[in-house]
Image 1 (cartoon, helix red, strand yellow):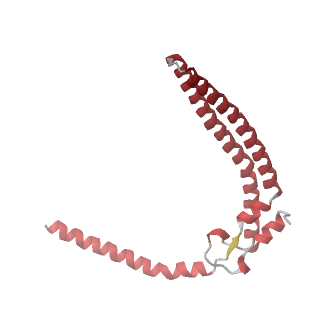
Image 2 (cartoon, rainbow, N blue to C red; image 1 turned 120 degrees about the vertical axis):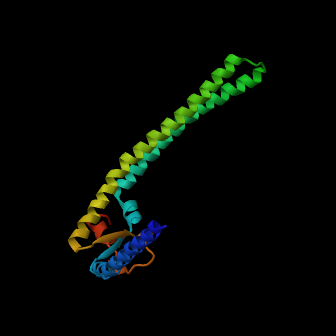
Image 3 (tube, rainbow, N blue to C red; image 1 turned 120 degrees about the horizontal axis):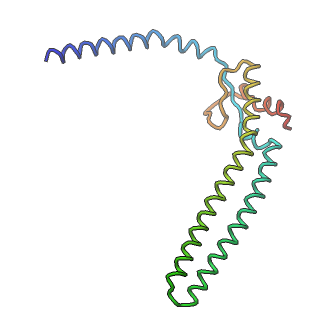
Length: 174
């Protein structure tokens, strides 16, 4: 029992020390945040207007169309084989196994093609995002911004702190 009272006493002292530290440091936190310059940028607008984005979208559309055509052929072949088996009306374990294997191969092909498309999308989009990020960072450093938020996540912001057009100018986007 005496250990419990002693432990409670120590716990109270620790809590008091933490509360005191927080009380003392709070004005400093507010003072530091008052000197920070915060800006916003419409990342989506910049991304959509980048010439590289349009090229990447065209490349992805072409790739998707090719992939859909290839998968369509595989799916049609699978459906034709299933229909032919059903028309035959005979149950054949070997043929059923072949159809299951063909269906599994189709599903694997779909997953593989989606993975390839996803990887290609990342390869095309990552350099565009890096270019935008570099321009934002350059303007932020040049104009003394401590923090830049995306316009999509802000609740309120004065238009004075919007650097979207400065970034677009640096990227030569009209």
